[in-house]
Amino acid sequence: MTAIAVAPVAAVLAVTPAAVLIAILAAALVAVVFAITFREYGKVFRVRGKEASGFYEYFFSRCPELQKEPFSCTSGGETLSGLRLWHGSGSPAKGLITIMHGYGLNMEHYLPQAGYLARAGFQIILFDGTGVGRSTGSRILGLPQHVNDASAVLDYVLSIPGLASLPLMLYGHSSGGYAVCAVSCKKEYPIKAIVSAAAYNDALGGMKATLKRRYGIMGNVLALPLAAFLRADFGWRAAGLTAVRGLRLTGCPVLVVHSEDDPVLPFKEHFEIIRGAMAGRPNFRFLATRGENHNLGVPADINSRVWRLNKQIRQNPLAGQGLEDAPLAGQSLEDAPLAGQGLEAELWELQMALDEGLMACFLEFFEQAADGCPRPVDA
Image 1 (spheres, helix red, strand yellow):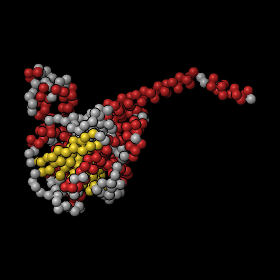
Image 2 (cartoon, helix red, strand yellow; image 1 turned 90 degrees about the vertical axis):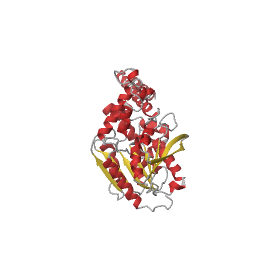
Image 3 (cartoon, one colour; image 1 turned 135 degrees about the vertical axis):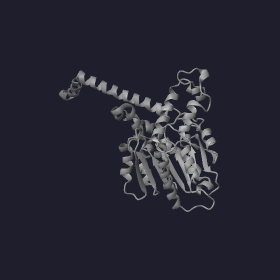
């Protein structure tokens, strides 16, 4: 009896110092991984997104033929700021396209693309997500919030008879591309067509891509705690908000587009997941483009120049006072460019550029979908 009682104690005493050291190091490693991931998660999502700029006014000064009407709706207690856009020709609308922006951008970025589609006869809905641009919210919250915001805007649109009667179509880029696919996980919507550009399948995959881009192969290790952070912010249902699941719930035509050289969301890790799951379905089309570009809809060379200009502006210590007040390197305050000149004018002019070939492809897809929809008499 004594021997049996002593055995567990002997086993504990037999633990070597090396084993204790390994246990301590493992615990420390786990703590470091959680700390780094928590910091990165906070840097990305516990801050406000891209703020509004003067490009909004610049765009409409260049495009007087376009009509606009601001709107607002609520999402999770925050107020989303949006815009309805159409061409002033007075012709009946072919349909209603809701555009959902990507992470790090706001609705201003998509105004040229919206204008292109509006001139072709579509009404357009754009909006800033929670914590972005003109919308309220002290932080972005996280990638599943894109889906929540998309659902809130669609609920608002469908509550307005004049808009609800139009064929509803969705266009999203990056996180917006994920949202337009996954929004059907929230509830059933009468969606007639979806264009998803440079998207990922689920929030966990989208966040993992950011960590791998910053930390290389170590990003896979740092991504391990992400699921816990997601559940803490959005609950257990967040894992079910996937593009593939949402697309399986809709029978409308879907065009999925991705660059084979996408530097942000690698082609094989994201596009191939969606194509592999949905291949063979007659309502799906897949388009693989070339060129090192994530911001599809904008020419790759223009996108690179915009990125460099934005980086230059961020590095300017006075950029926060407004571009018109910020001197270029080597200039004094007296030499700073006036409003509408210098960096501001160059940046905004570049932002007007479109990938005409790809936008024509999107337009053809939406028009084909619209031709298969009965046109409301009051459109």
